[in-house]
Amino acid sequence: MHFESKERYRDGNFVSFLLTKYFAFAMIKMVIKMIVNMVEMLNAAKKGSYAIPHFNINNLEWAKYILEEMETLKRPVILGVSEGAAKYMGGFLVVAQMVKALVTSLHLTIPVCLHVDHGSSYAVCKEAIDAGFSSVMIDASRHPLDENIAITKEVVQYAHAKGVSVEAEVGHIGGKEDNVNGACLNATLEDATSLYQATGIDAIAPALGSVHGLYQGEPNLDFSLMEQMKEALPIPLVLHGGTGIDDEKITKAITCGISKININTELQIVWSQQVRAFLEKNLEVYDPRKIIGSGEEAIKNRVREIVTLYEKNRK
Ligand SMILES: [Zn+2]
Image 1: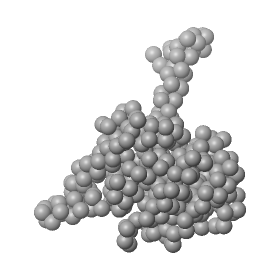
Image 2: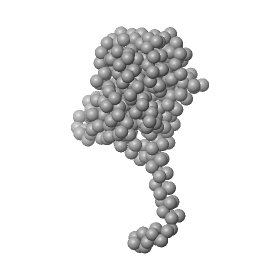
Image 3: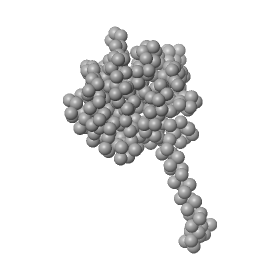
Image 4: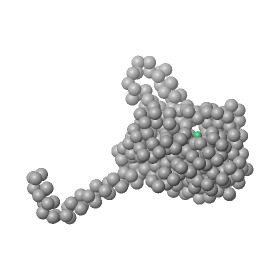
C-alpha cells in the first residue's frame, strides 16, 4: 500500500500531493500564528486604556498555569523570560519549544507573546530570536544614552527583519530582581524621545520611580512625566516593578499611558506562601507534582485579579 501511494505521486497525482503540503503548511502556520509579537496587543491596549500583563515564568508549571487562566479569561498575554530564568530552564530554545508546545497542546486560542525580559546584549537578544522568541527587551540602560541607542538600534534591525518586537529601557529602573540590580536613575522626556526616534523601538520602559523586587518605602511614580511621554511618543509605555504599587496607582499609571505591566515578584510571593502552608500541613507528602501544584490556585487567582485591575477603565 505504501509503495502504491508513492507510485501515485510519481504518476503525477499532484492534487493529493498539494493538499498534503497545504495542510502541513497550514498547521505549521497555525502554530506559529499563536506566538505573536506584542505590537498589536499593546497598541490595542493603549487605544482602549487598559494594560496587558507581562508575567515572568520560571518553569513549565508557571507557564501552564498562566496560559490556562488567560485562555479562560480570553485575554492576550506576554510571557516574560529573564536570562536567569532561561538559563534555569535549560536555555532559550528549551523555553521557546516548551511554550510553543503548550500553545498547541492546550489548544490555546489567545495571542501569546514570548518575550525576553531585560536582555543584556545584542548577542542575548539574537540568541532568543533565533530560538523562536517573538519579542525581546534590550536593556542597555546601564550604558550612556548614545551607547544605549547604538545597541538598541542593532537589536531592532535584527528583530524587525524577523517580525519580532523590541522594548528598550531609558533611565535606569533600579531595585533587586534576578540579574537586574542597581540604583534608580529617572528617565527624561528628551532621552526617551531620542531613544525612540533613533531606534524605532515598539515599546519603551522609562524609569519613572518604580523599582524591581520589593519596595523600601512608598513607590513614588512620576505620573506627570509619564503623561508627557504618552503625548510625545506614539509607542506604548511599559511599567516594570509592578509588585508593591497599590491598585489606585496602577490604575492611574494606565490612564497616564502605561500599556504593559511586568509582574514577577508578586506571583512568586503568592505561590511560595501557598506551597509553604501546604508543606507545613502535609509533612508526609513527597510527590513534586503535589508540592509544586499546591500553588496553582494561588497563581491563577492572582492572575485573574491582575487582569481585572488592569482593565478597570477599559473603553
Ligand atoms: Zn524589569
